[in-house]
Length: 116
Image (cartoon, rainbow, N blue to C red; front, top):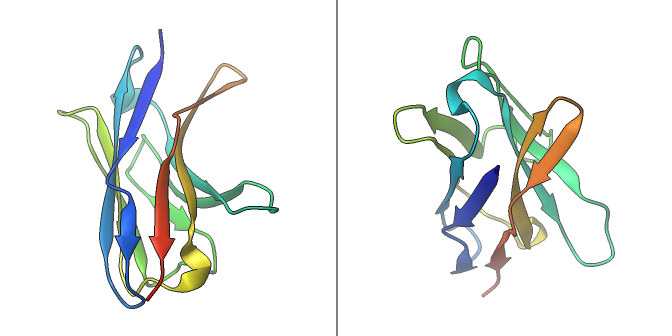
């Protein structure tokens, strides 16, 4: 079965950096577009970044452009989210996502808290 396991969250000061990882299993990782979403209390889940399988191209939410970088290692079945210049408004639970034949699969999420 499809499994997505996020790690790397934690408490960081404004301006700091974190790298999130998502280990995937149960499907052909190299053939699937992978996405990172986040959800803050009282807000809807929003797309943060996406990396496509065909050519490795990426896209980002406007709020994180220039600060976050999504990447993938197909040999390790892992997708990463490098987050730099973190702001308090980046505080959220971050989720890994893959969509396979009209079904969305999610990890349990990892909490990122940006605070001094």
